[in-house]
Length: 242
Image 1 (cartoon, rainbow, N blue to C red):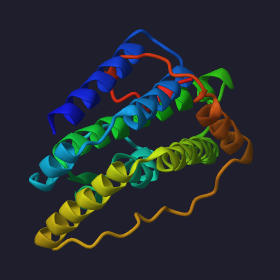
Image 2: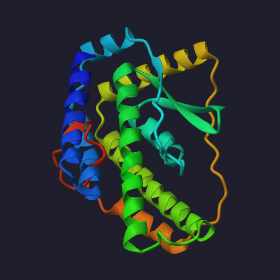
Image 3: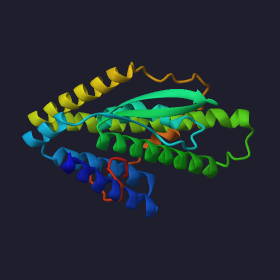
């Protein structure tokens, strides 16, 4: 769908510009809200539905990135829902997870971009939290629960906000938009069946977490304002900073 691909490209471009200009975390999350607003405003036509039926789903693996705290694992399921894709992980070697998205090409591209961008957002917030509280000199066994607590708190709040955006989008959806979702799901399910894949929820490791750090992480994920769209430049303005 050329119209959809062009729209996603514009949103990603806006988001990229926001990040390059050193905008705050909140501005990044606000960009995400703007992306959703743009998607809601996009009118799905009968022609769009016909074009989608002719498309095929693809499977793409995210490029490797430094993610020692498994942030992507905490975010990928909700991001897949948000972007109309499905995700599965495998662990082929050296305890390194691979994250694979299945869906229409433009949706998969968006999902991978969003996962990478939000992961970097959480990493940046974690770094600032550790630095500002002078936790850098703590021994690893003391620092670890603080890191885990902050990461999980931040990821949880981001996931909650993504869910809030999806609920708003569902309320505003037209009949054609709902039909588009049904068509896309059928295409993805067919691809998953061809690949012999059955999805399951990634398991989270049980670890001791620091309560204050968890609260600070949720506050970081909640700093974004979704009330007003803010421009950025990157891709799909769904991650913004608010």
